[in-house]
Amino acid sequence: MKVLGITGGTGSGKSTAAEYLISKGFACVDADQIGRELTAVGQPVLEIIKNELGAVAYDNNASGNGLVLDRKALASAVFTDEKKRIRFDGIIHGEMIKIIDRKIAEFKCRDEYRGILLDAPLLFEAGIDDRCDAVILVTADTETRIRRVVERDGISEEDAVNIINSQMSDEAKIGLADFVVDNSGSTDWLKAQLDEIIAGAGL
Image (cartoon, rainbow, N blue to C red; front, side, top):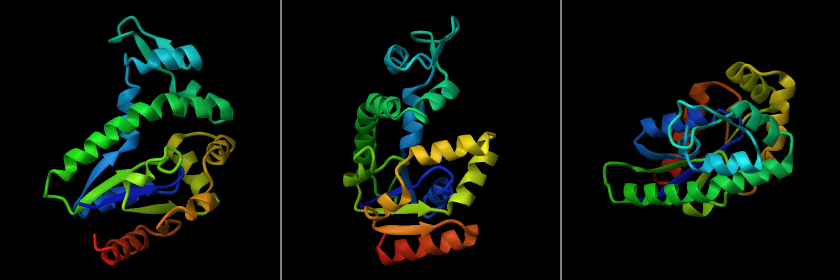
């Protein structure tokens, strides 16, 4: 069973593309979801984040170690300080990759799926593109991405630009991807591009 990677910067519409591929019969390993589970209330990794980045709060009613990730404080730290972003990625990625590998192995033992989708915004940055037989990069023009992030997250345009600028550029990713999908237009156009890719790749 082939593994199809899908990635894209914030506001590109990667999640919409992933949802469509899931509807076409792909099993999904969602790196973002794994990251959320690793940083859920009371998880051990929060102790490390607290000591190194400080972006946590304490709740007497919380489970485990009582720590709760302060996502706003974390975003403020990692999207404006490159060293902090690299350190946070280092804390999370090792544990995340172990879970991703396990989930891929589990899906490969099943035959009800047409393939496995590895949905990871930091696919290249985390070095897990080597798990994939092919990679789709979802892109959109910068203006569209900024508008989507502002509407989705309720933040300022300046904050949206800072987030986009903190990520690996589309230009760098294009050279690493097997397929590039432009999601600046309609959902129907996005789906048509994805249909062409999975048909042409024999997925």
